[in-house]
Length: 119
Image 1 (tube, helix red, strand yellow):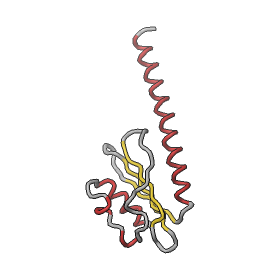
Image 2 (cartoon, one colour; image 1 turned 90 degrees about the vertical axis):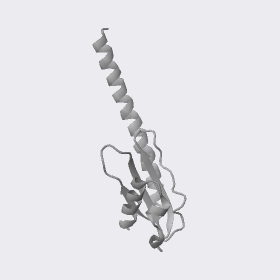
Image 3 (cartoon, one colour; image 1 turned 135 degrees about the vertical axis):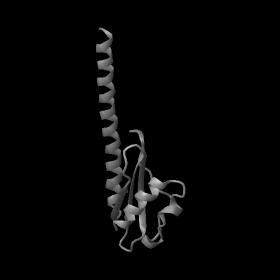
Image 4 (cartoon, one colour; image 1 turned 30 degrees about the vertical axis):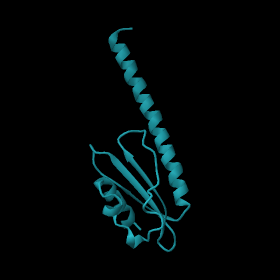
C-alpha cells in the first residue's frame, strides 16, 4: 500500500468511528430524555453557534410548575454525557434564574433561559 491509500483508509476509519460514537451519544441522550419526559412537561433549550461548545438543557416540570428533574449535555466531543443539574430540582418555574444557576457559563444560561421560556 502506498501512502495515499493508507491516509484514505485512516480517514475512512476515523469517519466510521465518529459515526459510531455519535450514534452512541445520541442514544444515551434519547434514553435520558425519555426518562425525563415521564416526569412531567419538559422544556428544552439549546445554544446556537458554530465554533463554541453546544449546550442542551431539558427541564421537567410537574403540574404545579416545580422542577422534577433536569438534563444537561454540553461539549465539543461525542464523549459528553447527559447529567442532572443539581441546583434546579424542587425550584418553582418563577424561581429559576439562569445566571444564578450557571454564574460562569453564558452558554448554559442561554440554554436554560430557552428551556424555561418554552414552559
